[in-house]
Length: 572
Image (cartoon, rainbow, N blue to C red):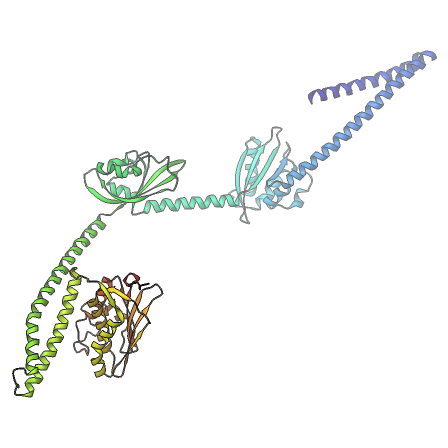
C-alpha cells in the first residue's frame, strides 16, 4: 500500500512537470522559433498536453472511484454504528460533535432534534444530559466545568449515571490521540441491580453469620481465617486475633482426630457447596473446660479460595436433658416392671382366696349339704358368688395386662377357625343381650379361612368388644358382628352398636389403661378401664391393630385388623 501511494505521488509530480514543460515549450516556440521549428515544437507541446489530459482523466476517475468507496465505507460504518448495542458519540479536537448513533440517543434519552443542530459542542451535550441525571451533587455549570476540566487534562474516565426514569448508564470518556473525544454509553441497569442485590445478600448473610447463636468458623488448610462472635464465646476468647491464624484441631480432642479429619483438613479437592454430615465432639478451651458440641461442615468459596466452614453448636444443655430423660425413662421402665410384678403377685395372692369364696358360695346356693333355712341366705350367697366372679374377672384383666407390660405374656399360636370362634363368643354374651332386649346379628364373608393366632387371646378380645357393646347399648338396641376378608388379604373383625357412643375427645382416653371415660364418682357403668387397652395390646402382639370409631349418641364401631401373615392359606 505504501509503494502504491509513493508511485501515485511520483506520477502526479511527473504530470505537473510535463504540463509545465509543455506550456513553456509552446510559449517559447511561439515567441522565438521560426515556422519549421515552430511546427515541431508545437506538436511536441500538444502531445505533452494530450498526455497530461489523459493523465488528468485517469486521476479524476481514480478520485471518483475513491470517493465512491469512501461513501460505501461511510454507509457501512453508519449501519454498524446504528446496530451496535453501544451508544457512541464522536467529538473533534475542538470538542464539536462529529457523529453519533441511534443507540446513544436512546440510552441518554436525548432529543434527536437538538443533535441535528449545526456546531453542537460537548458543552451543549453535557448541559442537555444534566437534565436527565439524578443524584448529582454539583450544579449544572459546575458539572460542565468539572467534566471539561478532566477532558482538558486528557484524563480518560468511566462513571455511572442514573436517569430520572430509573435507568443506569455507564459513560466512558476516551481521549483520542488527535485531541478529540469518543464518548461511549452502555446500559448497565440490570448489571448494577444484580450487583446491588448481591451486595445486599452478602451483607444480610454476614449479619446472619455474626448474629448466629451457633459458632461459625472458617479455616483454610486447618488454619482459622474467620470466626464470629459466638465462636469467641464458645472458645472463651476476647478477640478474633486470638483465634485467627491458629490451627482449628488444637481445640478438639486428639482421640477424635480420625473422625474429624474431613472437617479439619484441606478442602481443595471438594466441590463448592458440598456438606459434611453432623457429628458430635468436644471443644477444649485453654482453661481445660470441655464443652459438648455438634458440628457440621460445608465447603464454600471465600473470595477466590475454597475454605471449610464449620457450624459448631453447643449441646451441653441438650446432652444434660437427654441424660435426664434417659435416666427418667430407665426409672419409669423399672417402676413399671416392679408395678407389673407387684400386680401379678397380688393378683395371684387374691385369686386363691377368691376362688374359695366363689366355690363355697356355689355350694351354698346349690344347697349340696341340705337346705339353708332362710331364703335370704340364698339371696346373699348368690350376690357373693356374682360379686366374686366379677372381682375374679377384674383380677384376671389386671394380671393379663401386667404380664403384657412386663413382657412375660407368651403367645401360643395355632390354626383357628375364626367363624367358629366368633359364634362361640357371641353365645357367651347372648344371655345378657337377651336380658337387655338387644339383638346381636352376625355377618360373615363366605368361605372364611383359618387364622394363625393365639385362640385364647383372640377370644378375649372379642368377648371384651361384645361385652362393651352390650354394656353401652340401651334396651332395644342392636349389635352387628362382622368378619371380612380385605383386598390386601388381611382380615377385619368388627363389632358395631347403636349405643351411647363416645365423644371424639374421649376416644384416646378410652384406649388408655385404668382410665374411665365416665370418671364421676356416681358413674353408671362400672369397670377397671382395661378392656379396650388390653384388647389393643393383644392385637398388637399379633402384628395387628385395634381401631375405634364413634359418634356420641349414635354408636361405636371397634375393629380388629389382622395382617395377611396371620391368614392360613387354603389347601389347593
